[in-house]
Structures are given as structure tokens and as C-alpha cells.
Image (cartoon, rainbow, N blue to C red):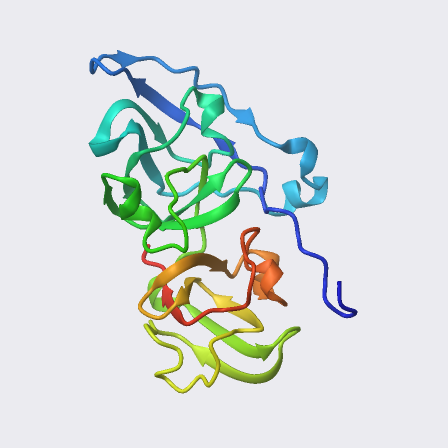
Length: 244
């Protein structure tokens, strides 16, 4: 690792708990679910973080299905889920976001490819995975984006790591950073002052997605390794605000 570059931070679990409200079997009959609150990953979370940055309660609701087109087993959540397999599902193949904005992850513990999930229906994996660099048919964990605020989102991108070099402030949606005057196809670092953004690898909101939130890492992402566990390069060419 080069001198002066901070080590990658571990996934931000933030003391999440999953709270499925009920399940529905393949024949459509309702099945009661064990609704006790189960703490996930507490052994991996710093005690001070768990006390000072808990998951706030809010108007979030997502319904996930283990088959495409909203078929098969169904589960509703109002908080985050670190591993859908622990709830008895092998994968999420369709979903409906009823309240709030969410981010889904390819792997458990909020790792791997990220998928922004705004209010609406997602009948197949293509609806949420978008145009990625490789085919993804897997979502195992997800959580609310607590700080999403479409009208109040503001961020600054920097040409180099550690908030250095040329900078540009953003408070709108930009399908092409180069078209607005950014002379590079890479972003070295960024500071999210308020709200939440989704950054894309290519113009037109295509490619890998990186969810950037003002309440993660203090809103500071000092190098591309902090953009997400799946980040391999600093290439970012379009950015938009996340709808709440």
C-alpha cells in the first residue's frame, strides 16, 4: 500500500438488526414469523459506534421475494438485513420498495456489488442491478439509506486522493461529469456534505454503483478503496442524487 493512503475500512454494519414482519409461502398462505429482534454482527462492531451511531427508526419498508415477478416466498422488512439466508431465503430475485431508499449488496454483511433501491417495483434482477460490468443475479444483504435527501444533497469531488487537487461541488444530477467540465474519467476522493448520492462507473448512470452517504465515514471518502468493497478503480463518470 502506498504511503499516505489510508487502509480500507471494514463494511459499516452500524448495529443493524433485521425485523421481518411475516412470510408468505408459495401457495399464498401467511406464515407467522419469529419477530424477536436479532442483533447481527455485534461482535464485529465497535462498542462506541453501536452506542453513538445506532440505526434510527424511520419510515422504511421493503418486501423481498425468492422468485422473479413477485412470486414464491415473501418477507417484509423495516430495518436492515445482514444475511437473507439466515431468514430462510437463498437469494432475492424480485422486490418492492414501499418506503424510503435502500441499498442492496451482492454478498452478506453489506459487501460486494451495490444496488441503489428507490421506491418502486423490481420484478427481475436486471431492474435493480442496472448495467454492470458483469452479470449479477444475487442480493444477500440490504439496509436503508438513512440520510437520503434528494433536495438537500451536496458533495464535493476531488481530482486526487486525500481531498487534494482540482475540486468541484455537486448538488444536482450529472449523467456525464466530463460534459459538465470535469476533465478526467476518475475521481480521486470525495466529501459528502449532506444527503446521499449514487456514483456510476460510466456515463449515463451505467456500470458499477457506489452509494455515498454523508453519515458514513463522516462523509469523507479519501481514496477509491473506500468507495466500496467492490471498488477496483477510481473510475466514476456519472453521479446522481438518491431519491427518498
